[in-house]
Image 1: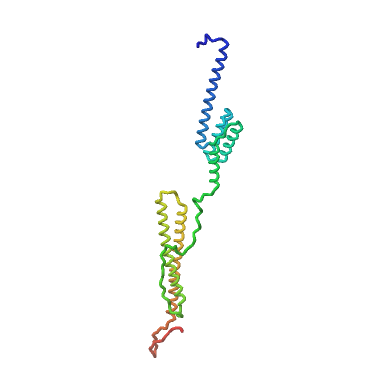
Image 2: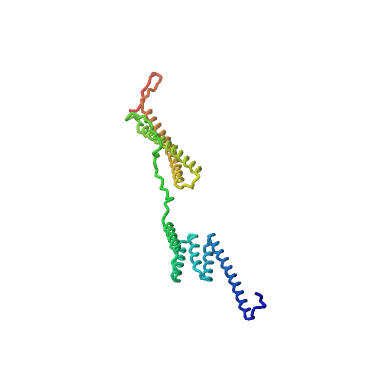
Length: 263
């Protein structure tokens, strides 16, 4: 239709309609751009910006879908209580407008409540390791027995010699314990280095405990051996000094021997 044949009264109506269409198209384009920006912000973790853009869209259009999308933005970013509040607000507004309830809203509310309950329950996946219990020797360690020669009862230094032998026996057992614990610690170290799985705090704590008590066992073993040897040789020297001895004697008028010893 050519404009020249239109009645003069129709021209203002046509111009107004054209302007309205242009304005509507521009408004729809702006709303679409803002909706895309809100979705991008929610997905990238900037939920505050996403919710703010969705609020602007709801104010501008009065479309309840933007209230629902606010709840989804909070839910995607782990803000479960805020998400529940927005979903319930969406359901309340639906009821106020006389529209049917949305079953999808109840499902999202249930999911958010389940996540809140899971966060409130302490996870047993990584319990705190128990403190190490001091033991002289692990159950799997070989028992070391030291044969002890019992000195004659009542002989001088007998108590020291017995104590020395006992101390050396304990020292040997402690050294053997240290060797076993050190081997176990090295095995756990190799397992941790070769493992393709995630880091195990329990296994690392056990390895550290084995290593610590291994060094303690080495110290106890060395002290037992040194102390026992000292006690044994002191007792042995006392027994020798108390035994009778035949000592040669010589003088201007005699040659002989004397018997020395303590009684």
